[in-house]
Amino acid sequence: MQKKLVNMLLGVMMLALIPFSYSNASTASVTLDGIANAGWSEDNLTSTYLYVRYKNTTNYYYQWRYGDPEALRWSSLDALVSDPDMNTFDWWLESGGDPFNAPSNPIWTSIYLEKGLYDIRLAPDSSAYNLLAYWGGNQWNNYVQIWADYDGNFNFGEGAYIASTANDSLNFYRSNVDGMTISLKENANLYFYINDTNSVDNSGSVKLDVTVVPEPGQVLLFISGALPLVFWSQRKKMLSMLKQAVHKT
Image (cartoon, rainbow, N blue to C red; front, top):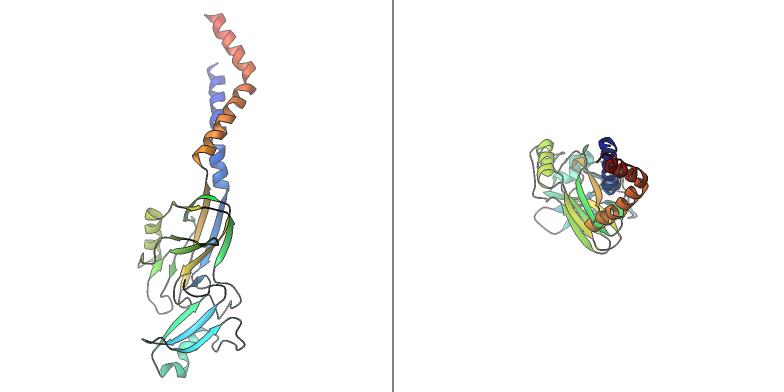
C-alpha cells in the first residue's frame, strides 16, 4: 500500500516539474564574435564600416561602409597599419563588424521572442572577448548590448567590467551577472551586439543562453489542473486501498 502511494506522489511531482522542463527546453543560444558582431551603438549596425580619424580631432582621413561604390582600401588590419601613408600622422580607428573578411554581414545578430520574462546567462561553453587583442593588450569582457525592435534596451553586464584574462571575466560574469532577467512588453526581434568603437582589433567571442521564465500563475494553474487528472486516473486504486484500510480496522 505504501509503495502505491509513493508511486502516486512521484507521478504528481513529475507532472509538477513539466513546466520547468518546458522552460529549459525553450532556450535560445546566441553567439557573438568579438569582431564580426562588434560595433558602436551610435553608428548604423546594419552594415560593416571602417573609418580612420585624425587623432584628437573630429575630422576623418578615410571613411568606408559596405555598399559604397569604391572597394575598401586595405585587405587586412596588417595592411592598414603597415601602409606608409598611415605613418605620416596620428590616427584612430573606428570600425564595426569584419569589413576585411565578412563585409556583407550585418553587425548584430538577432532572434525573435514572444512577450514575457527571460533569463539570460553565459552558455556553459562560452568564451570571452579581448578588446585589445591585435595590439597585444588584455581587456577581456563578456558584455553584450541588446535592443528590442519596439525600442527597448537591455544590457548583459557592463562595458566597465574589464578583466585581465578570459577566465577572470567568465568567473566574474557567472558570479555576478548570470541569471539577470529582461521583460519584453510585446513580441519582438532582439538584436545582440558587442558595443565597441573599434571591432577589427578584437578577438574571442561570447555565447549567451536566453531562457523563458514561466510566470508563477501559469505553474500554479498547470499543477491545479494536473492534480485532479492524476487522482481521477488513480481513483480505482485509491478506492481499493481505502476499502482495504477500512476492512483491516
